[in-house]
Amino acid sequence: MTVDELSSAAAQLYSRWIRDLSRILTARNSGPRGWSTLILNAPEGMSVHANDASANGLVLKLSPNAAPEEIAALKKRAIQEASKDRRKILLRLSASDIVDRTIQIPTAASDLVEPLLRNQMDRIVPWPVDETHYGYQIVGTNADAPDQLDIYVAATTRKIVDNALHRAHALGLRPYAVDFASEPAAATGIELLSLEADALKQTGHVLHIVLMVLLAASVAMGSFGFYLDFDRTSRNDGLEEKITAAKSQVEEITKLNDENTRLKEQREHLTKRKITEPPAFLLFEAMSRALPDSAYLTEFEIHGRETRIVGKSDDPTALITTLEDSPHFEDVRFSAPTTRQEGDTVGTFSIVGRAEGGANLEAQP
Image 1 (cartoon, helix red, strand yellow):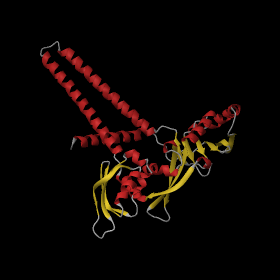
Image 2 (image 1 turned 30 degrees about the horizontal axis):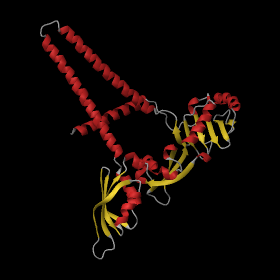
Image 3 (image 1 turned 180 degrees about the horizontal axis):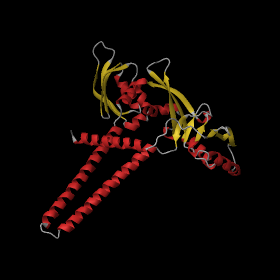
Image 4 (image 1 turned 90 degrees about the horizontal axis):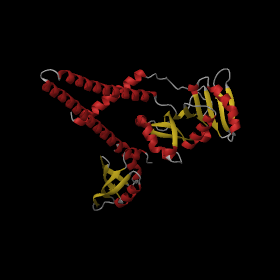
């Protein structure tokens, strides 16, 4: 086993151990949390609703242009209602705040919904992707295409969410999440933004810090033990031999620390390489969209970010411009002369280009 393989295996083992231990130590809620107090944001204003048998329904309503005096007057009532269960305060956006759409993805890619949505988000929303909060729900198999899944996507802008949160905070309410539901009073909806830290990640982070502290304490205690041993044995015969042994142990610890640092750097290099190199299926999808119907491929090779295609087209030269215009490829050029056999209407081409990598590729249309 090479050093790189050993480093990768060690990193995976450590991450899996931390994750499993975090699951054991972290209390997880089963199913959707729902809401006890619902803050509904709508064009006609913000309303607060209760969800209990004694006060089911509208509690208060805040007009869109409410003055500070009106907000102050309603704040006490809102806080009183929310105090029944502060962990279940939910902010819900109305249909006027949302852009929704049902898209299709291959059933085989059901475990890749998140990256596929990020790749297509700029086709769904008319504003910048980095200003977007969105959520999705897997509807089921498409009625007309059994090999496709219907995915319902709901998206909104960061500005809408921030404004709604600002008005909720002005009423003294701190929601745990922002969601959307077609039925305003539904028990659960599509979560657009979680306002809580991931408890599992928090536990894992704390475990990692504790382990590092224990390791540092162990090293410190070991070093102190070496010092005491040196101080005691320095008064006896054979002082030089014991000093040499102590130095040898310290050097071994230093070598182990240096090796650990080197393995960590190699792991970070592998992680960075994984992020920057584009996924093959996304490159293939981008190439399929870019090539015209009159061209087809006989070879498709990917080496890191370098992509090479060989095929036939009635106008091979025009493919260079077509691929250069695509946001997924750059530095597109012929890697061999174009040939056309006598009597053929199409020519054989060999083209190479460099793909936009990792997260940059997934963000492209």
